[in-house]
Length: 416
Image (cartoon, rainbow, N blue to C red; front, side, top):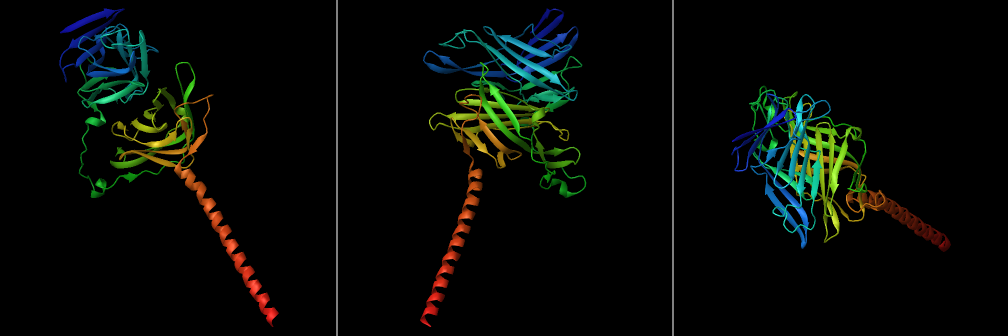
């Protein structure tokens, strides 16, 4: 079934069908006779909310009755293209796109949900509309190509609010009414293949290292909550270690790139037990998730995700791990590590940290609490102490031996 709607000279067509799954829906945004956005979406939402008896989680899918709302746009001067969907009792979902001429990406993803909808949020202790968003997304593709990701992938919009996509095909900045046959496939859909060497078997050897850069600059990042109070602090220099296929060298390489603080924007959210820090620099997006264990009263880095498309890459690199246990520290204190650390996220991706200090929970007066030193720093502090103690002991032994020898010599003279 096709439904066409127009407002202010802009028309939207809604096509409903079963593209990849039972709830897949195809949406189009058009202006005049031209289509600028087309998306085949299968999305589900998971929202944690307070009830009269505690907390609960609402889980629901984007329904086939979802409609393209009037706020959708093909973009204009200073206004980016946007796909805005309305569904249910006052719920809205938005994808805002941006482009650098080489790639387009989902630059902003937001959800507006209505807690007054008792069928979706039964026994909610509050009512009204709640809006959440994130400006970090791993959804990107080459211009004039279709983004395709059949695998399931989740995006955190806020603490306790997640959207999961599957069976996705979409394109923005379209030049025709149909999705491009040229596809930018997400990394989760890509299979690992061994390419026969063109000149020598050496091309299938271990990844070639690229000379690393100098130590990175230390960035100063902070996140504020809804009332403007700082709730997360981080001081750190970051290096990203990525193994990818190099276009220029025609082989797999291990490349190290510094995150540059003066070109990096920070965003995120602070919850009672989960805090998120998202760093975006050009075509690199890095997300840290910190979790607080209310039983042990310790927090740790529990998840990391990265999305990067550097100039020498053949396709966007995406990796994540949500079962990490790094940077453990007592709540109410800050974690500090002056020494270089390597956080192994997945085999093809790790992070080097330099002069790190962070506090994702219980920040007071916009400054770090007393620091807990990492084990490496503690060991580095012990080494000079141990060496000094050993030298002092050696000096003491030599002195005692000297005194004993002198006494014996003096005693010998007395006997003669």
